Image (tube, rainbow, N blue to C red; front, side, top):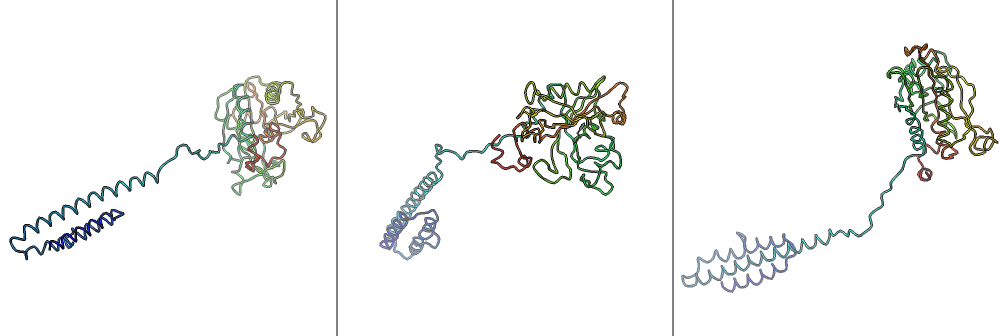
Length: 341
Ligand code: PHE
Protein backbone atom coordinates (compact mmCIF):
# COMPACT_ATOMS: atom_id res chain seq x y z
CA UNK A 1 0.00 0.00 0.00
CA UNK A 2 2.89 2.25 0.80
CA UNK A 3 4.31 1.55 -2.65
CA UNK A 4 0.95 2.36 -4.19
CA UNK A 5 0.99 5.73 -2.43
CA UNK A 6 4.55 6.42 -3.57
CA UNK A 7 3.60 5.57 -7.13
CA UNK A 8 0.64 7.94 -6.99
CA UNK A 9 2.87 10.68 -5.64
CA UNK A 10 5.46 10.27 -8.39
CA UNK A 11 3.04 10.13 -11.28
CA UNK A 12 0.83 12.91 -9.87
CA UNK A 13 3.72 15.32 -9.32
CA UNK A 14 4.99 14.68 -12.83
CA UNK A 15 1.56 15.24 -14.34
CA UNK A 16 0.96 18.41 -12.32
CA UNK A 17 4.29 19.92 -13.36
CA UNK A 18 3.43 19.22 -17.01
CA UNK A 19 0.05 21.01 -17.06
CA UNK A 20 -0.30 23.97 -19.38
CA UNK A 21 -3.67 25.36 -18.29
CA UNK A 22 -5.92 25.84 -15.28
CA UNK A 23 -8.43 23.39 -16.83
CA UNK A 24 -5.85 20.65 -17.16
CA UNK A 25 -4.77 21.26 -13.58
CA UNK A 26 -8.34 21.07 -12.35
CA UNK A 27 -8.85 17.75 -14.12
CA UNK A 28 -5.78 16.38 -12.28
CA UNK A 29 -7.09 17.62 -8.93
CA UNK A 30 -10.25 15.57 -9.54
CA UNK A 31 -8.27 12.60 -10.81
CA UNK A 32 -6.09 12.35 -7.69
CA UNK A 33 -7.83 14.12 -4.84
CA UNK A 34 -11.48 14.00 -5.87
CA UNK A 35 -14.12 11.81 -4.16
CA UNK A 36 -13.48 9.04 -6.62
CA UNK A 37 -9.84 9.99 -7.06
CA UNK A 38 -6.89 7.63 -6.90
CA UNK A 39 -5.62 8.76 -3.51
CA UNK A 40 -9.09 8.63 -2.00
CA UNK A 41 -9.70 5.09 -3.17
CA UNK A 42 -6.41 3.97 -1.58
CA UNK A 43 -7.40 5.65 1.69
CA UNK A 44 -10.74 3.87 1.60
CA UNK A 45 -8.87 0.60 1.95
CA UNK A 46 -7.18 1.73 5.19
CA UNK A 47 -9.82 -0.14 7.16
CA UNK A 48 -8.33 -3.41 6.03
CA UNK A 49 -4.92 -2.64 7.55
CA UNK A 50 -3.68 -3.90 10.90
CA UNK A 51 -3.58 -1.59 13.94
CA UNK A 52 0.23 -1.25 13.67
CA UNK A 53 0.26 -0.46 9.97
CA UNK A 54 -2.62 2.01 9.98
CA UNK A 55 -0.86 5.03 11.58
CA UNK A 56 2.24 4.56 9.44
CA UNK A 57 0.32 4.32 6.19
CA UNK A 58 -1.99 7.09 7.39
CA UNK A 59 0.98 9.38 7.85
CA UNK A 60 2.36 8.57 4.41
CA UNK A 61 -1.09 9.14 2.87
CA UNK A 62 -1.40 12.53 4.56
CA UNK A 63 2.05 13.49 3.40
CA UNK A 64 1.22 12.54 -0.18
CA UNK A 65 -2.07 14.47 -0.04
CA UNK A 66 -0.28 17.55 1.35
CA UNK A 67 2.44 17.27 -1.28
CA UNK A 68 -0.11 17.05 -4.10
CA UNK A 69 -2.11 19.96 -2.73
CA UNK A 70 1.03 22.09 -2.46
CA UNK A 71 2.11 21.13 -5.94
CA UNK A 72 -1.31 21.98 -7.39
CA UNK A 73 -1.36 25.35 -5.67
CA UNK A 74 2.16 26.18 -6.81
CA UNK A 75 1.39 25.12 -10.37
CA UNK A 76 -1.83 27.13 -10.33
CA UNK A 77 0.08 30.25 -9.31
CA UNK A 78 2.74 29.60 -11.95
CA UNK A 79 0.11 29.14 -14.66
CA UNK A 80 -1.72 32.34 -13.63
CA UNK A 81 1.52 34.28 -13.75
CA UNK A 82 2.38 32.88 -17.17
CA UNK A 83 -1.11 33.74 -18.44
CA UNK A 84 -0.78 37.32 -17.20
CA UNK A 85 2.65 37.67 -18.77
CA UNK A 86 1.24 36.39 -22.06
CA UNK A 87 -1.70 38.80 -21.88
CA UNK A 88 0.62 41.73 -21.25
CA UNK A 89 2.74 40.68 -24.20
CA UNK A 90 -0.32 40.31 -26.44
CA UNK A 91 -1.81 43.64 -25.47
CA UNK A 92 1.40 45.59 -25.48
CA UNK A 93 0.90 49.03 -27.05
CA UNK A 94 3.72 50.82 -28.79
CA UNK A 95 2.86 54.46 -28.21
CA UNK A 96 5.65 55.55 -30.54
CA UNK A 97 3.97 54.03 -33.65
CA UNK A 98 2.63 56.93 -35.79
CA UNK A 99 -1.19 57.11 -35.78
CA UNK A 100 -3.55 56.97 -38.80
CA UNK A 101 -3.84 60.56 -40.00
CA UNK A 102 -7.34 62.07 -39.66
CA UNK A 103 -8.62 63.72 -42.86
CA UNK A 104 -9.86 67.13 -41.85
CA UNK A 105 -12.23 68.73 -44.34
CA UNK A 106 -12.82 72.42 -44.86
CA UNK A 107 -15.60 74.78 -45.77
CA UNK A 108 -17.17 74.39 -49.22
CA UNK A 109 -16.12 77.26 -51.55
CA UNK A 110 -19.73 78.40 -51.92
CA UNK A 111 -20.08 78.74 -48.15
CA UNK A 112 -16.78 80.63 -48.03
CA UNK A 113 -18.30 83.11 -50.49
CA UNK A 114 -21.54 83.23 -48.45
CA UNK A 115 -19.65 83.87 -45.21
CA UNK A 116 -17.82 86.80 -46.81
CA UNK A 117 -21.12 88.20 -48.01
CA UNK A 118 -22.77 87.78 -44.61
CA UNK A 119 -19.87 89.52 -42.92
CA UNK A 120 -20.20 92.53 -45.24
CA UNK A 121 -23.96 92.85 -44.64
CA UNK A 122 -23.82 92.18 -40.91
CA UNK A 123 -21.20 94.94 -40.75
CA UNK A 124 -23.79 97.27 -42.26
CA UNK A 125 -26.40 96.37 -39.65
CA UNK A 126 -28.31 93.66 -41.54
CA UNK A 127 -29.80 90.61 -39.79
CA UNK A 128 -29.38 87.17 -41.40
CA UNK A 129 -32.64 85.20 -41.73
CA UNK A 130 -33.27 81.54 -42.48
CA UNK A 131 -36.56 80.39 -44.03
CA UNK A 132 -38.45 77.32 -45.25
CA UNK A 133 -37.66 75.65 -48.57
CA UNK A 134 -41.22 74.26 -48.70
CA UNK A 135 -43.23 77.44 -49.11
CA UNK A 136 -46.81 78.55 -49.67
CA UNK A 137 -47.53 79.75 -53.20
CA UNK A 138 -49.30 82.60 -51.45
CA UNK A 139 -45.98 83.91 -50.14
CA UNK A 140 -43.87 82.88 -53.12
CA UNK A 141 -46.28 84.49 -55.63
CA UNK A 142 -49.50 86.24 -54.44
CA UNK A 143 -47.94 88.36 -51.74
CA UNK A 144 -45.19 89.26 -54.23
CA UNK A 145 -47.68 90.61 -56.72
CA UNK A 146 -47.42 87.64 -59.12
CA UNK A 147 -51.11 86.95 -59.60
CA UNK A 148 -52.88 83.85 -60.93
CA UNK A 149 -51.81 83.28 -64.52
CA UNK A 150 -48.38 84.87 -64.08
CA UNK A 151 -45.95 82.84 -66.24
CA UNK A 152 -43.60 82.07 -63.32
CA UNK A 153 -46.46 80.16 -61.61
CA UNK A 154 -46.61 77.64 -64.44
CA UNK A 155 -46.42 73.93 -63.60
CA UNK A 156 -43.62 73.57 -66.13
CA UNK A 157 -41.40 75.89 -64.04
CA UNK A 158 -42.35 75.10 -60.45
CA UNK A 159 -42.31 72.04 -58.17
CA UNK A 160 -45.77 71.88 -56.59
CA UNK A 161 -46.79 69.40 -53.88
CA UNK A 162 -50.54 69.48 -54.48
CA UNK A 163 -52.98 69.56 -57.41
CA UNK A 164 -54.31 73.01 -56.53
CA UNK A 165 -50.81 74.58 -56.49
CA UNK A 166 -50.84 75.86 -52.94
CA UNK A 167 -47.66 74.30 -51.54
CA UNK A 168 -44.39 74.33 -53.45
CA UNK A 169 -40.62 74.28 -53.28
CA UNK A 170 -39.82 77.99 -53.23
CA UNK A 171 -38.63 79.21 -56.62
CA UNK A 172 -36.87 82.25 -55.12
CA UNK A 173 -35.85 83.55 -51.70
CA UNK A 174 -38.14 86.56 -52.18
CA UNK A 175 -40.95 85.09 -49.96
CA UNK A 176 -38.51 85.87 -47.14
CA UNK A 177 -39.26 89.55 -47.84
CA UNK A 178 -42.89 88.85 -46.95
CA UNK A 179 -42.02 86.75 -43.91
CA UNK A 180 -39.78 89.54 -42.62
CA UNK A 181 -42.48 92.20 -43.22
CA UNK A 182 -45.02 90.01 -41.39
CA UNK A 183 -42.89 89.26 -38.36
CA UNK A 184 -40.36 92.07 -37.84
CA UNK A 185 -40.68 95.61 -36.58
CA UNK A 186 -39.73 98.49 -38.88
CA UNK A 187 -37.17 99.54 -39.92
CA UNK A 188 -36.01 96.23 -41.47
CA UNK A 189 -32.57 95.34 -42.81
CA UNK A 190 -32.22 91.66 -43.66
CA UNK A 191 -30.47 89.20 -45.88
CA UNK A 192 -31.85 85.66 -46.32
CA UNK A 193 -29.66 83.05 -48.00
CA UNK A 194 -31.07 79.64 -48.98
CA UNK A 195 -31.94 76.99 -51.53
CA UNK A 196 -34.44 77.58 -54.31
CA UNK A 197 -35.89 75.15 -56.86
CA UNK A 198 -36.92 75.41 -60.50
CA UNK A 199 -37.63 72.85 -63.19
CA UNK A 200 -34.39 73.46 -65.09
CA UNK A 201 -32.25 70.86 -66.85
CA UNK A 202 -28.73 70.54 -65.49
CA UNK A 203 -26.01 72.18 -67.59
CA UNK A 204 -22.92 74.32 -67.04
CA UNK A 205 -24.97 77.29 -65.82
CA UNK A 206 -28.31 75.72 -64.70
CA UNK A 207 -29.49 73.38 -61.96
CA UNK A 208 -32.98 72.52 -60.62
CA UNK A 209 -31.65 73.47 -57.18
CA UNK A 210 -29.48 76.48 -56.52
CA UNK A 211 -28.92 79.11 -53.86
CA UNK A 212 -29.96 82.73 -53.65
CA UNK A 213 -29.29 85.48 -51.19
CA UNK A 214 -32.23 87.81 -50.71
CA UNK A 215 -31.68 91.28 -49.31
CA UNK A 216 -34.19 93.88 -48.18
CA UNK A 217 -34.28 97.30 -46.51
CA UNK A 218 -37.46 99.08 -45.43
CA UNK A 219 -37.23 102.42 -43.66
CA UNK A 220 -38.44 105.99 -43.89
CA UNK A 221 -37.25 107.80 -47.01
CA UNK A 222 -35.39 104.90 -48.63
CA UNK A 223 -34.63 105.55 -52.33
CA UNK A 224 -33.08 103.94 -55.38
CA UNK A 225 -29.91 105.90 -54.55
CA UNK A 226 -29.62 103.89 -51.30
CA UNK A 227 -30.00 100.67 -53.26
CA UNK A 228 -27.27 101.63 -55.73
CA UNK A 229 -24.96 103.02 -53.05
CA UNK A 230 -25.26 99.96 -50.83
CA UNK A 231 -24.83 97.41 -53.61
CA UNK A 232 -21.88 99.31 -55.11
CA UNK A 233 -20.21 99.25 -51.71
CA UNK A 234 -20.81 95.50 -51.38
CA UNK A 235 -19.26 94.85 -54.82
CA UNK A 236 -16.23 96.95 -53.94
CA UNK A 237 -15.75 94.97 -50.75
CA UNK A 238 -16.08 91.70 -52.66
CA UNK A 239 -14.10 92.52 -55.79
CA UNK A 240 -11.88 95.37 -54.71
CA UNK A 241 -11.92 99.18 -54.75
CA UNK A 242 -12.79 100.78 -58.05
CA UNK A 243 -15.01 97.90 -59.19
CA UNK A 244 -17.25 99.27 -61.94
CA UNK A 245 -20.96 98.41 -61.96
CA UNK A 246 -23.98 99.26 -64.09
CA UNK A 247 -27.72 99.02 -63.54
CA UNK A 248 -30.01 97.97 -66.41
CA UNK A 249 -33.81 98.33 -66.37
CA UNK A 250 -35.61 95.02 -65.86
CA UNK A 251 -38.96 93.70 -64.70
CA UNK A 252 -40.01 91.85 -61.55
CA UNK A 253 -43.63 91.78 -60.34
CA UNK A 254 -42.68 92.81 -56.79
CA UNK A 255 -40.35 95.76 -57.52
CA UNK A 256 -40.96 99.02 -59.33
CA UNK A 257 -38.72 100.23 -60.80
CA UNK A 258 -36.74 97.02 -61.28
CA UNK A 259 -33.19 96.55 -62.46
CA UNK A 260 -30.40 94.10 -62.94
CA UNK A 261 -26.90 94.90 -61.74
CA UNK A 262 -23.80 94.02 -63.76
CA UNK A 263 -20.19 94.12 -62.63
CA UNK A 264 -17.52 94.97 -65.18
CA UNK A 265 -15.54 91.81 -65.94
CA UNK A 266 -12.57 91.63 -63.57
CA UNK A 267 -10.67 89.48 -66.10
CA UNK A 268 -10.70 91.74 -69.16
CA UNK A 269 -11.73 95.08 -67.67
CA UNK A 270 -14.72 95.32 -69.99
CA UNK A 271 -13.02 94.48 -73.30
CA UNK A 272 -14.74 91.11 -73.59
CA UNK A 273 -13.28 87.67 -72.83
CA UNK A 274 -14.42 84.04 -72.29
CA UNK A 275 -15.19 84.71 -68.60
CA UNK A 276 -17.81 87.35 -69.48
CA UNK A 277 -18.74 85.57 -72.73
CA UNK A 278 -17.38 88.52 -74.69
CA UNK A 279 -19.78 90.99 -73.08
CA UNK A 280 -17.40 92.86 -70.80
CA UNK A 281 -20.03 92.71 -68.04
CA UNK A 282 -21.25 89.98 -65.70
CA UNK A 283 -24.80 89.97 -64.35
CA UNK A 284 -24.80 89.58 -60.57
CA UNK A 285 -28.29 90.26 -59.25
CA UNK A 286 -31.85 91.45 -59.73
CA UNK A 287 -33.14 94.32 -57.60
CA UNK A 288 -35.57 97.19 -57.35
CA UNK A 289 -37.74 99.38 -55.17
CA UNK A 290 -40.33 97.24 -53.38
CA UNK A 291 -43.67 97.62 -55.16
CA UNK A 292 -46.14 99.69 -53.06
CA UNK A 293 -48.72 96.89 -53.53
CA UNK A 294 -46.36 94.44 -51.78
CA UNK A 295 -45.80 96.82 -48.88
CA UNK A 296 -49.55 97.48 -48.57
CA UNK A 297 -50.37 93.75 -48.52
CA UNK A 298 -48.06 93.54 -45.48
CA UNK A 299 -49.90 96.45 -43.84
CA UNK A 300 -47.01 98.91 -44.25
CA UNK A 301 -47.88 102.59 -44.72
CA UNK A 302 -46.37 103.52 -48.10
CA UNK A 303 -46.76 107.23 -47.34
CA UNK A 304 -44.17 106.85 -44.61
CA UNK A 305 -42.08 103.84 -45.56
CA UNK A 306 -40.35 102.66 -48.71
CA UNK A 307 -37.82 99.94 -49.39
CA UNK A 308 -35.57 98.15 -51.79
CA UNK A 309 -34.72 94.50 -52.31
CA UNK A 310 -32.31 92.39 -54.27
CA UNK A 311 -31.76 88.72 -55.04
CA UNK A 312 -28.43 87.31 -56.11
CA UNK A 313 -27.38 83.83 -57.20
CA UNK A 314 -24.91 82.42 -54.71
CA UNK A 315 -23.33 79.80 -57.00
CA UNK A 316 -22.56 82.46 -59.59
CA UNK A 317 -21.09 84.58 -56.82
CA UNK A 318 -18.81 81.73 -55.74
CA UNK A 319 -17.92 80.88 -59.35
CA UNK A 320 -16.74 84.44 -59.89
CA UNK A 321 -15.00 84.61 -56.54
CA UNK A 322 -13.01 81.39 -57.16
CA UNK A 323 -12.94 81.46 -61.00
CA UNK A 324 -14.96 78.23 -61.33
CA UNK A 325 -16.13 77.63 -64.88
CA UNK A 326 -18.88 75.02 -64.44
CA UNK A 327 -21.84 75.18 -62.02
CA UNK A 328 -21.99 71.39 -61.72
CA UNK A 329 -18.62 71.33 -59.94
CA UNK A 330 -20.25 73.14 -57.01
CA UNK A 331 -22.68 70.26 -56.37
CA UNK A 332 -20.81 67.14 -57.45
CA UNK A 333 -18.76 66.89 -54.24
CA UNK A 334 -15.73 65.64 -56.12
CA UNK A 335 -12.99 65.78 -53.53
CA UNK A 336 -10.34 66.49 -56.20
CA UNK A 337 -12.23 69.69 -57.00
CA UNK A 338 -13.06 70.69 -53.42
CA UNK A 339 -9.49 70.19 -52.21
CA UNK A 340 -8.35 73.11 -54.37
CA UNK A 341 -9.99 75.72 -52.16
N1 PHE B 1 -36.42 86.94 -56.92
C1 PHE B 1 -35.81 87.45 -58.12
C2 PHE B 1 -35.33 86.27 -58.98
O1 PHE B 1 -35.29 85.17 -58.51
C3 PHE B 1 -34.66 88.38 -57.83
C4 PHE B 1 -35.08 89.64 -57.13
C5 PHE B 1 -35.11 89.72 -55.75
C6 PHE B 1 -35.42 90.76 -57.85
C7 PHE B 1 -35.45 90.89 -55.11
C8 PHE B 1 -35.79 91.93 -57.23
C9 PHE B 1 -35.80 91.99 -55.87
O2 PHE B 1 -34.97 86.45 -60.12
